[in-house]
Amino acid sequence: MKSNKQRRAEIVARRLARADRLQAQMKTPRDARWLAAQPGCVPADLALLARLNNSHGLPSFYLDRPFTCRDCGAQAVWTAKQQKWWYEVVQAGIDSRAVRCLPCRRARRAALAAARAAPGANLLGDEVAWLRAVSAASPDAPTEARVEAALRSKWEGVRKVAIEVLGRWRRPADLPRLREWVRDESLGRWSAVRRAAGEALVPLARHPQDDAWVLDALADAHLLAAHWVGFVQGMPATLLEEALRTALDAGEDRRLANLCIALAHARRLPSPALLGRLLAHRDRSVAAMARWARRTAAGRPCAEDDDKKTTT
Image 1 (cartoon, rainbow, N blue to C red):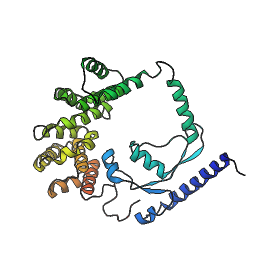
Image 2: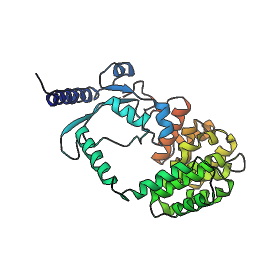
Image 3: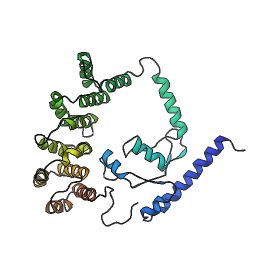
Image 4: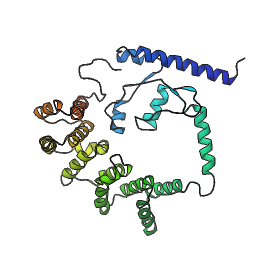
């Protein structure tokens, strides 16, 4: 009779063989029906992924992915089902990957739990938990003072959660500083604080008085685009057209690409003449984002070539 350890080893070996076989078969184009019938291949929810991620290279299918464990060096498989749960249920970033096998993940979680069990060992975690708990209620003076202190924290994660609290309170008085954080380039292009401030602004923005500011902010930081879909969908077409033309005539390629990303998320397109100029733009990122906007407007958010009939 085989032990549980032997059975687990056999399961891993079968998964590795299946993943290698599928990877070899994927070297030639395959249509969606063939992929859906393969073990180790699970369809992705493209609409959900597009809402959760700014990337335009979203997968149509998840495939079993072999990898080497970072800690023990063992060969393991990140299954397609596990990827679907990770990206669509947990809603992790599409660029994240599995790096540890199951035994090493369990050992790491146990070690972290033991370290956090000591008194005062997880002060930052306790502060974040408190911030998330108070966001659902109307603030009193002590709560406001503690949130203000968190907004000045040297830890970006604490500041991010404190800004999320402001977003849930939805106080118009917080609008100016939320805008200031969104436009603060010293925080970095990929700052979690800037992203949180952008999300917190969404319920406070109004048409038409905030249209111009939102477009300008989206042109500066494309990481906000996924959260402003509804607002961009409500903007007049003439305003979107004007913003695109202004960036195009000024040669502001990065801003132009970011505006195309916003259009892609909102599934909107400029006039055919302007779209043609964007598709033929000398900057590859602008042309790529314009193609992505055209695909999403047509109901095809995956980043496949327009002339392809298959999905890989």
